[in-house]
Length: 318
Image 1 (cartoon, rainbow, N blue to C red):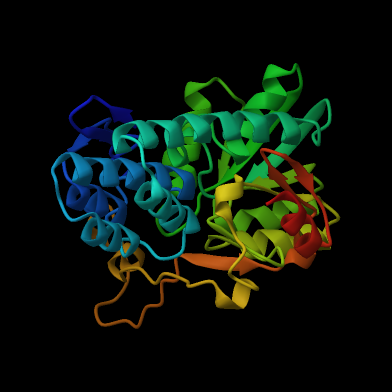
Image 2: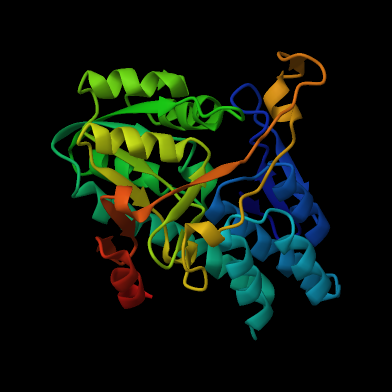
């Protein structure tokens, strides 16, 4: 994302990897629409974008409460969205500068997450990741991919397997694109291939991001993450969640209380505008699932690595 002083410019993630198109957002409504339609996605990136949406509303003299409500309703699961909007509502300084601070803090947090997480990987590791928790999903650098980048920068050799992440294909379109551009060893697999490679002993670790972490450590992330966590436990592979503190929701007791967004059936029955399922078929499309805390080896934050019992660890770090 880029702030040019007049508009928030967002790289349209719906068109990657085939096209690189920047979408200008000049109002809070523009930002809300970009979040809702997934021009921008990823919990930290959504939060930063919403902060600039509030800044745009303030510059235009718009009703901040109304802008805040519209932005919060754009996507319900990622807690970073409400966190950023509430912080902007409470800010006393220039809101553009506050949004810029949120962006700067996010990048710094990602780099700190990367440093802490890199220490958990061996000198030569193969890591499985799911969805996209990289620079595209954040203000820059990434959370899960930040761990991988930091490990490589420290001299370790890390190969990455990226789940395709159906139905929206964030792994195929975004994670593979990011890592390939950085010349990081990446192999793309479909979601239903990961069990085969776990069985072969291919993975040394799983590292994923998060959209919301409940007070007990239950974690919501892109649909399919829970399946990967179950496979990791079954094969004795550590499962790490990398996320900034802004992703922690202390007011949400457990994963059962996390709102799970249901998205359009069209994203399931169509692929790049071509229908791949029968007309009239019943469809369910939860965009996220919840991984219970008992399946998580550690949660990597900018302040360090947290381990169970997560209730105590999360309270201690907040």
